[in-house]
Length: 138
Ligand SMILES: [Zn+2]
Image 1 (cartoon, rainbow, N blue to C red):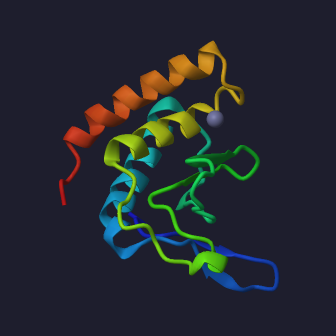
Image 2 (image 1 turned 135 degrees about the horizontal axis):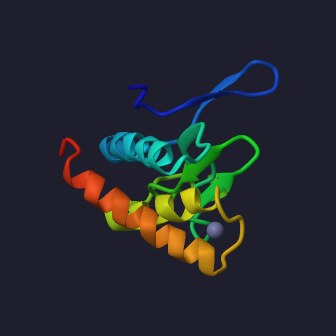
Image 3 (image 1 turned 180 degrees about the horizontal axis):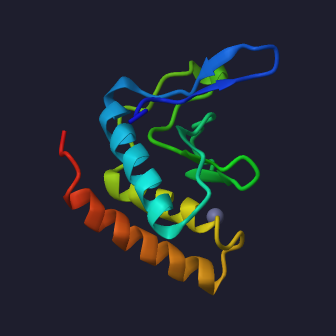
């Protein structure tokens, strides 16, 4: 299954876990499973699914690295180190996360934000919502 926060080997061999608030672990695991299931269904080259590395307020909700096949999703904002580095009290909603995952996965077919990207995002989101009905609810 591999449904846990991914690790990435950085330059120098340092292993750095992606940041994830402990309370967001269940949603992360669910979305990890669904993102790979959707990628298989739509034949998209997803290779890694991770929490966003810099979950700063006001930044992007997600990123899609077309070169590495990595999708990074914001599960919860975190204050900058200068501001104390604390997690926000509230996480992103499941609806927001599903929308962001669909948006980022759609970039594998259309890198821009045109009509095709929008239509494919809608298609993936509908698939994710249907698939999540059958996913374990824990
Ligand atoms: Zn985008």
